[in-house]
Each structure stands twice: as C-alpha cells, then as structure tokens.
Amino acid sequence: MTTILEINHLKKSFGANEVLKDIHLAVNKGEVISIIGSSGSGKSTLLRSINLLEKPTGGEIIYNGENVLAPGFNVPKYRTHLGMVFQSFNLFNNMNVLENVMAGQVSVLKRTKEEAKKIAVENLEKVGMGKFINAKPSQLSGGQKQRVAIARAISMDPEVILFDEPTSALDPEMVGEVLDTMQALAQSGLTMVIVTHEMQFARDVSDRVIFMDKGVIAEEGSPEEIFENPKEERTKAFLSRFLNK
Image (cartoon, rainbow, N blue to C red; front, side):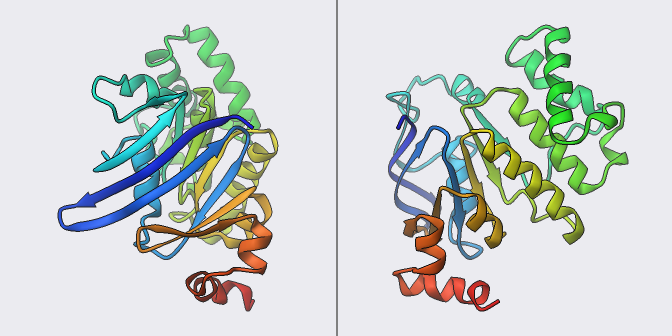
C-alpha cells in the first residue's frame, strides 16, 4: 500500500484556541476516508491544514517523503497535487462551465487550450454536466455547480481530492446527485478525503472512517467498526442519532 500523505503531530491554534491537537493520519493511494464529527470538532480545519489554506502551528505533513511545512518547500507545486472541493463551489461567475474547468489546467498545469478543453469535456460528461458547458454558474442549481466544481478538481489530475462538506450548502433534493457523483469517483480508484455529515454515504463509500471530537481523532476504523461497533463513548453518543434511525 502506497502512502501518499503522512500527518504527524499536527497542531493548529487560532490565538489561544487549539483547534487541532496532535493529529496523526496516513492517507493511502486509492483510499476513501470519511471524517465525521460534530461542528467545531476540527474536521474542516484539518482539511484546510492539509492543503495549507491554514498554516499548521506544529507537526509535519509528509508528501512523497518530504515535509511540506519545511522552510523553502514549494507549496504551490504541492497544492497542484491536491484537489479541493468546497462547500460553496468557488466557481468563477464571469466564466462559463467549460472555462471554469479549463482555467486551472491552462494557468497552473500549462496545458494547451485544446488539451484542457478535451479533458474538461470528458470530466464534465463524467459528472453528468456535459450538456451545460456553455452555461454560466448563475444559471445552474447548487447541485450542478458542485458537480462542475468536482469536474474542475479531477481535471487537475490530483493525487488526492479533499472534499469539505460538499453537500452542506445544497437543498436536500440536490444532495443525492452530488453523492452519486462522488460514489462513482470513489469506485474509479481516486484517493479521497471527505469531511461529511452524510452518515449513510460515509458508511457505504468509505474504506476508513475517522471520528473527530474536540480537535483530536477520537476513533478510526472501517465503516463496520465505527458504525456498528464503536468503542469510544464519544463516538457512540455522536452516532446514536444516526444509528437509531
């Protein structure tokens, strides 16, 4: 099993508030990891620290044998290997769907426009958005925007895609279409780390589930272990609402 990312003793504080406390996590190639936990448990901060949108206050993130937090490390290059899908889509409103998916490929990966267009069209087809290539984001539903954002992320050929609560800003009827798209990606062998409130999805799609509480990884294991036989009282309390359904 190839480890892509290894996180050791990771800490993150905002002033006196320590949001992440001594996090250890390995992400292996082809693995789908779901991170669950209450709001404020540090899930999104962990994701944002992995791709350095937040600068950790301690610890190390090892990528391909190098610590990305070391002085002089090429952060922009590292970021090109990590896809990120946000809650709020982050599409460029002045560009159409095709241009949104092409932009990073041309400016960051230096692909030709022809090559970027071919890859963009393929990935938009893959997420069911091929018919909308000329639409502006303002003409799309939330679920459609999120699928465009996913197509944009995979068009950059990342080694890992990070999803930060990708369905939390969506109307309930749109959640399914985004989760179906993510499930198809998971089955294609992409390495994915997903912060989610969708417990059924985490249970069905993940190789590993991580439960965070108060800035620490309180428990981790297979979906069966976490959902059917959690060991920690904190995990049981968190999951009780879901498990009683």
